[in-house]
Image (tube, one colour):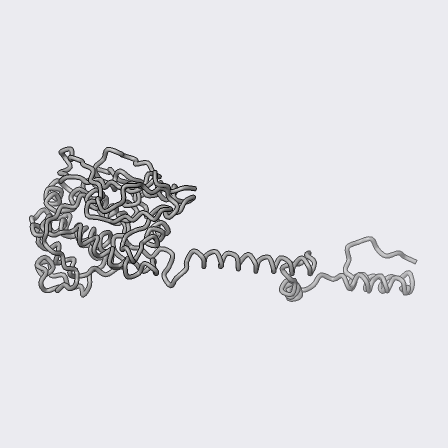
Length: 390
């Protein structure tokens, strides 16, 4: 009797080989071995695909392990959602504030302004801001805003006193025109600035340029700037100045979303009259009226909320100024440094020694001459300081 051949034959071929041998009949044991080999025939491609499809992804893990992993994933997801819900309380997204200097900084760097443009910009009330950006005295990272810090400042507002309550003893502080002069040195006089209504047909440079857009946007204003900056005519140079002022007003001082209000276009249409407007008072009025209305819904506040961050820098001693001797607050201070200092302490917990009652006021600054500085004490404030503790 012959044994089972020692080879890699399939069961079917082995059975045929045994039956065709001339040495005698195939025994039952040989047939059984052959049939066993037959069952080991590799599966077809269709069977392989079905096996892969039916195999669970958690193969190799016990049922209890798979159940525990699923539970942990579910609990982890719930924790993350709960944390985010805590941060994003309210109906407004986590970063609701549009006021930012980074937009105008990006535009100015892209334009590569010539001396003719700078001469006209010097006639505008916002030349001090433009000059610091042109001369790289302020960086985008230095003025990066913090919406969470802004919300904390807004929530410190006392609606009964209509002032901000700072420190453990509840010291009351105002945001004043002297503060804004210290931050931006905006040049203006006493003409009232109305921001209620504007008419497209009344804007001379819009009519002259035959701008047909129903609404200007930040993108369209940027495109117009890139177009006009190439021109050498007087209208080209002056329109660049108008649009830069418009862009600054829309994205920083009076942010209104994407669409630009025609009333802002009216206010920059006359370059000479622009300098006669009382910009500081108007900026404060728009911001504070929104805070008074939405102090309980801080994410809905609009206006130049960036001023609140510079205000906190000036009125607390937590953050150290980057450039202590510079006349403009946007250059003196680093907002991220302020935010980092307030990570461990709340505004309402400040110690007396950390709250500054004096307001730094700056005389008219041309940029070339050194400004005269003086300190003015707000007489309406109590004499004692209020500071923050850990």
